[in-house]
Image (cartoon, rainbow over all chains, first blue to last red; front, top):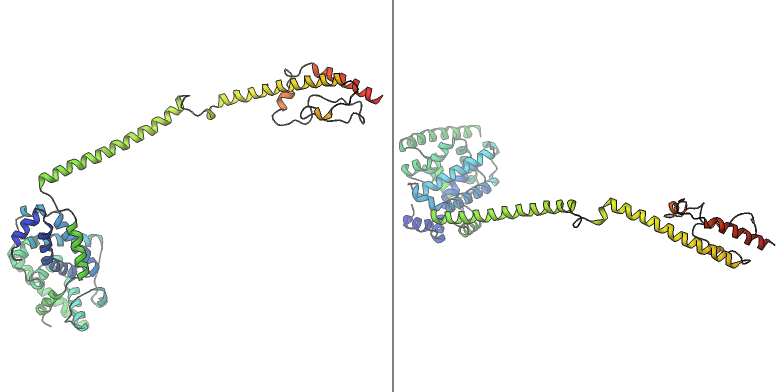
Length: 182
Length: 185
């Protein structure tokens, strides 16, 4: 959570663009990562992330009524956008056909081998069920608290813990299979 | 590979800076969601705008349809050139006028021949479309004052109309015969 987030949100709800701009700067990389891991394509991730924040800005007046953290609200919008994206476009991912150039992973300290390894991991995450993907990304990539994760996915904290456990187990199986095949 | 450590590395993924800047600029330039009252007022004015646009379109359609109907029922608005009945009447009038003109010309020609006496028939003054015959070579042929063979366009019906042909051409024929005999002598 951003320092002084509540004040920024109050100003943003009143229509102040600079306040929303600060919120954008803080949450945009998180939402982008979340979407990129789920869809796997940089351009699509950029488009969807843009739509998430545009939607949030245009509906900022409704936020106060929802009763949960601003970040969780953004993740909810992002989840819905990805679901809509999958409805219009069917995508299947084959780990063997992952093209490193199709996914832009910007990290200066990574060598090409690490980059490929990370992209294969992302492809493995995409093989999980949508709910498992969401929990894995929010809990282990973005380090969100369980409560905020529960608000974002619309489940109880207990359900999130269970999903988390099952998701890690399944991901290990997928990655282990990939290692054995390679 | 520790799975959890690998998942943590994913946090280093970030968007392109140019994309981020452009996206943010675009979003912040758009209008935010407004509180309920302001939104309702805006909705009201937008409704007025769309209503006015619909009304204008409807008026235009009515004017176009009404205009086409007026041209059909009213002679004042209708194009004169499209009235077939009047065109026919005009055409008939033209025919009559031509008849009269031709008749007058023929009568004047008769007078000219009779007055000229032994002078040669002014072939060049024969009415339009008449068969010009050389009086020396064929003295028996009558020089016909009114055209019978070659019919020029626009004059065919008029020249052979029985009502328009007067008795004067026969007299002219005779006078011309006399003139030809005189020439032959």
